[in-house]
Length: 30
Image (cartoon, rainbow, N blue to C red; front, side, top):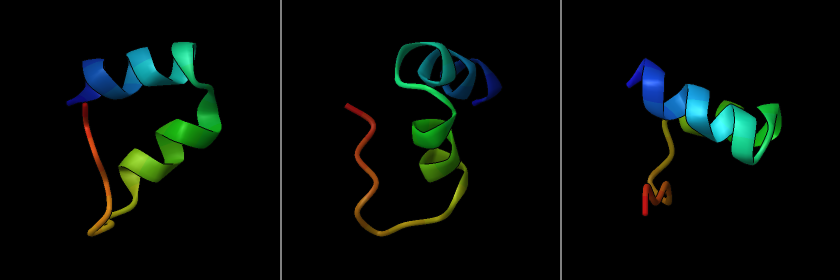
């Protein structure tokens, strides 16, 4: 999942990546 998070960090920024790192019931990886 490191690759997916790394891509999100580049596209959406560190803020979005932090959301993915934190376990949330409303996380959508679409």
